Picture 1 (cartoon, rainbow, N blue to C red):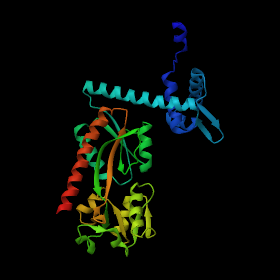
Picture 2: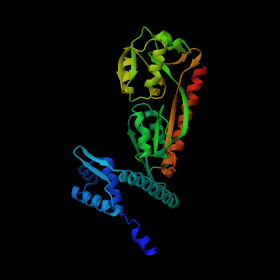
Picture 3: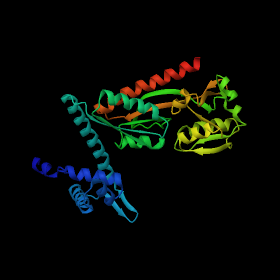
Picture 4: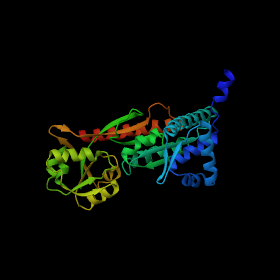
Amino acid sequence: MENAMKRNRLRIHAASLHYFDAVCRAGTIREAARRLNIASSAVNRQILRLEEEIGAPVFLRLSSGLRLTEAGQLLAAHIRTVLRDAEQVASRLDELRGLRAGHVEIATVAGTCACLLSDTITQMAQDYPKITVGVRIIDTHAIAEAIVNGDVHLGLAFEVPRQPEIHAMHVAQFPLGAVILPQSPMVQKKIVDISEFSEHPIILPKENFANRKQVHSLLFKAGMEDWGQYESGSIDLMKQLVLRGLGVAFMTRIGIEPELRQGLLAHVPLMQGDMPIRSELGLFVHASSPLPVAAGLFADRLMAIIDREYEATHTSAKE
């Protein structure tokens, strides 16, 4: 009986798992082979070997491409866990050897957190020059998926939809405000209602920004839902439109810190009734996987910098 059980145990080779994961990420065998810099036939052989080992197909071969079977989905989830565990072991071994080396991969939204990440990367370069950092620019709604799939260690963005597979490691509430030119009469106010901009052209964020729903909700309640004259998926472009006097944008101070310091733009917090409007910035990780050492070191510094900006925002609001 024991011998029979041993014969039935899977002996899946590491190469098969590696190639299978590459095909899952690439979507086709040809693209996976290109990324791995090997022949397509070599990748296909490993996939066939894997299917023979588990006794079931892992992909449906469709005219439109490959699709994971139920067995393939189960295997893909297992492989993501195995790869994360392997990375954590390697990270801990590096820590024991005192190398302080490793890699950090973080996902964020274009322009929103550039200053926060630049400051964090600068600190990491000074403290741990052997640690490499990769920053992926994706839409807010894709951040959770990138974390769950193991594509990134960390996700940083405003108003990220919560999922059970991801954990909010750190959150901070930043005032949502009107971004205007410093010579605007509105600058004299400590806080403004969004309805006060009913005579101004409105610059709206595109769907890739999570606070689009927040801004649209405010405009709807003020009877201004159809007043957006410009829409952009780029914070840099939104800033440029405001700088050229083409309208008012609504966002937090995060992402426009340099322009505020230089006096090129002003930020006036919004209210609804008597309540200030806030937007939540979150740093997210996988709910069930400990961070590798390098990612943990990065997260510690990033959280401190977020807290610094939070304190600066609330100090300026009191002045």
